[in-house]
Structures are given as C-alpha cells and as structure tokens.
Amino acid sequence: MINFRIRSGLAIALLGMTLGSRAQQTQRPEESSLLANLLAHNPAYFDTLLQNRDSLGIQIIYTQIDRNRDNTPTFKDYYYNLDTSRYFYPASSVKLPVALLALERLHELQGIDRTTTMLTDAGYDGETMALNDPASPDGRPSVGQYIKEIFLTSDNDAFNRLYEWLGPDYINRRLWAMGYRDVQIRHRLDIFLREDQNRRANPVRFTDYVGRTLQQWPLRTDSTAYPGRADVIDGVDFSKKNRVTLLDLHRLLKSALFPASVPKEQRFDLGSDDYRFLYRSMSELPGQTRWPAYDSADVWDAYVKFLLFGNQKGSLPSSIRVFNKIGQAYGFLLDVAYIVDLDKGVEFMLSAVIRCNPDRKLGDEHYTYTTLGFPFLQHLGETVYRYELGRKKTVRPDLSIFRCVYDK
Image (tube, rainbow, N blue to C red; front, side, top):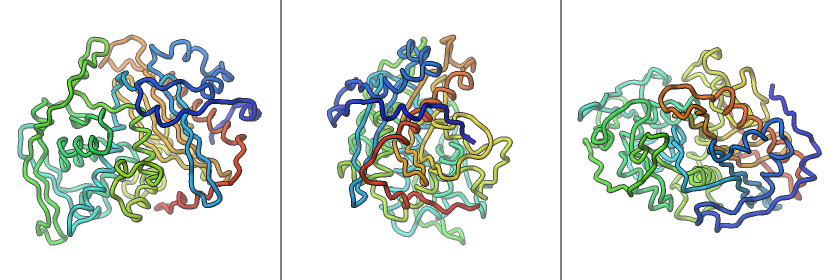
C-alpha cells in the first residue's frame, strides 16, 4: 500500500498565489509560492533536487480544482520552474494527443468505430504490417484496443499503428489548429527510421467481420514544413524529434477530462461514450484487465502511474484513481496526471518532468530513473495529495463520473 509520510498539518499553513490565463502565453510563467513552499517543507525529499532544479530540468504544474453547488469545476494553476522554451524529450507522453485524435477521427467517418477491424499494410521501406493483435479478445486489431494498450502499459507498437493511420501531417495540423502550436509529432517510437520513412504513413484498411473493406487509406507522404528548432542536448540533435511542452500536455489532459472548461477550439470532437471509454482506459490498472492479460511480476499496477506511486510493486488503494500519461526515454521522466480519491473527495491535476542523466551521455542507458526520477515523482504526488487532504473546500465534489467498471 502507498505510504504517505507528509505532515498532515502542512496544508493549512501554506499559502500560494494563483496565476491566470496569461501563463499560457509566456515562455516562463511567473512562479507561484505554493509549490515552492510545499517542496521546501519536505527537505529530506526535495532539497538537493531543488538546488539543482535547472540542471535536472525540473518543471511542475499543479492545478487545484474546486466545485460549486452544481458540481461545475473551477481551476487554479500553480507553476514551479516552468519554461516552455526549454526542450525535453517527451517520449511516450505524445501518445496522449494521438489517442485523442484517433477517437476524434472516427467521428468524421461513416460505418466504422473504435471496435472495427483495422489492418495496417506496408507500402514503403521500413514499414511493417499489422494484420492481427494477440492482445485483443478475438485477435483483431482496432483503434479501441490500441488506445487501451497505450494507457495500460504505454505500448509503443499501439502508438505506432495510430500514428501510421492518422499520419504526421494530419496529427500536427489538427493540433496546431486547436492552438497547440508548439507541438511536433514526427516519428514512431522504439524503432529508428530515417526522416523520409517517418514522413510516410502506411496504407490502412478498416474491414468488417467477413473481410470486406469499409474504409481505406493509401500510402501518404507528410510534406509539412516544420518550424526550425535548435534543440541540442549534450551534443545530440533533437530538432527533428517529437516535441511537446509540459504546459501543452497539461492542457491536453484537461481538455480530455474537462472539455467544458477549455475554449471550444481546444476541445476534441468526442461523444459521451468516447469519454466513458477514455476514463476507463486511462485509469484501468494492468491487474484489472483480461485483454491483454499481464503477469504481475512483469507488469504491476503502478507500472505507468509514476506520480504518487513511483515504481512501487503490489496493490494500490482501490479508492485512488490516476488518469494520466507518462514518458520515459533519453533520461527524461515525466507524468501528466489527474488524481482522484473517490472516498475522500480529493481531486487535482499534477504534471512534472525531471532529467535522470547524471553523466550527461545520451544512449548509454546509465539513467537514474530508479534512484532519482521515480522517488521524486512519488514524493511530489504524495506531497500534493496530502496538501489536498487538508485543503478546505466549500463543496465536496461529486466524482461519480470517474467511477469506472473494469474487467475484474
């Protein structure tokens, strides 16, 4: 079980300042005192890290949520060392917007949905086919099954198949039109391909149960002119790698969970059934699903729940649900999460990134995720959770919409 070690009286004693919407328009939003005070009151966990916050690339966003008598939420954002001009490799966090876009894309099409068979063909050098999915109940690949695998264990192949269906041109232009102008999603994950290969999107077919083609896409080429970047880290050029800021990830998660709270142009075109599917997929634990079936020795419940739980093994509190997307690669570790305690009426958003690469050599796999990154994210989540437990609210939130029924 989770072990909270933060003093319970801390929440009442600390005060902070709230930042308004102008934070979204600046590269380095004005820092709030609340997060700094929370961290300072736990020196055993944070002192050394915060003394080196810039070299470690630490950035944090914490959003308080209060509700009125109609259960309508309002949000207050707090920032620590946030700098949207500072590049970090987003790793698997880019799967969040692509999963959302895949659900939205289905709304534009007729005769197919997230359960329809999706077959990926190969039409260019380096491409591979996907004609079945052993992780699904009937062996059929589908958009819904890929999204489920993305959130359960951050499956890379599932992301790649959605990337290949949508194509980088569609992905980026749609996100830019929604206001996420700094996003660049330009390559598959976990396989190393040339730029021309990543600019190609595989031929894809959606078929019915007897194999008849319902919709199909040919091989497509991305001709987008991406803005020039100068993202060089320890001598390695990231200018053509995926890019998304912590602030945009935080906003994307908010749009997915609280669509009415964001401007209309930032909302994904999803229906009520899509949102129920998202809530379940984002919060379901590996031990609660039958398809895929995971060995708990290899894939534990906190496998992709870094904030609050780090990399701890064993069962998690049943009342706490984490709706999130993590990233872990090239020494960067991040988590973007909405955390609820259904029994205690606690809810908040928390996003953070830290760099775990003390030797400043990329690709050598000498990363300190276990000794530095996971403990930092766990202690940060515990600190904010404990603060929220003591924070007075006028109205207890009704969180029943986030109670999901899982396979087991």
